[in-house]
View 1: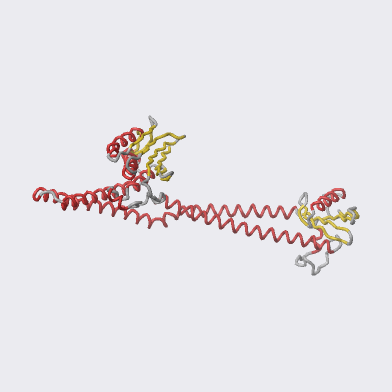
View 2 (view 1 turned 60 degrees about the horizontal axis):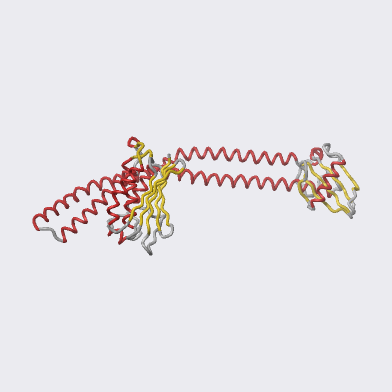
Length: 406
């Protein structure tokens, strides 16, 4: 449980940090892209407003914030093509760019006009705008290769830095998670120790009460009072034993007791043991077991799990119903299932079935001698073996499934 809690702590912190870093990176790059795109648009507007040339004189125009106009005029590569109203080329200017000749400029301009957009990005990393001039149009192109490469570099660098800090944060969280989880671990250990100590302490007075009851029955004879005392001390002893078993199951795995065992034999023996109890209410156990099914496990613990699930089905299925017990191999796993009918009108919360002391029908559970710990023990056994255990309802039936992985 502590390991699982620590994993959840690490995952929650790192996932939150990753999401936050991605939001920050996306925001920075978005603002950067918008800013550069606006700067390029302003430069195109400046060229258009000056008749297709770059004005090196300072002005109050859209790029008045640029300081050195003279230097900027030398590094800015642009060209334009003008068209008449009927679509004829009336002017081509490629003096400010060496990579494009007049023919290529006309092709780029025609492609831009055919797109129907007032501005956008053309081929070969050119930003363009279409401006009405008299009765015709001017398509002005700006070479933005360096700007786009800069944007790509910024995205790569920002993501790299974010991933570096994410990995660094992950390492730090993994290292300090033990410190934050330690109080929970200490409380859990104290709780388990308390249960173990209390359980052992309770065994003595229960044994004394049981012995005194036997003496009373020997001297005064058996009566309703002694029978009630014997019944309640028996229930109390069962509860203490179950609490001790549950505390033991939740301890760290000790694989010295693990060995390869025939699970099919464990299931068959348990089904035979409960067959007589089931016949009292005319219940029938149907067994379907794949022969030679073996798993690597603690035999005693897995036997307890199998007995708990079958016992639960026998206790809580309606009279004259069928209990299906199945054991099959599926790919590289072993699937154990116990299926029984629900009593008419009974509802169960499968999400809480494995909670401690959960009982769907408390009065009927008490009559059956249940304390609501059996399925919790079954879950602890499954977790101890890294197996999956679940419960689901289907057509007025409940199915418990345990999957052992090889």
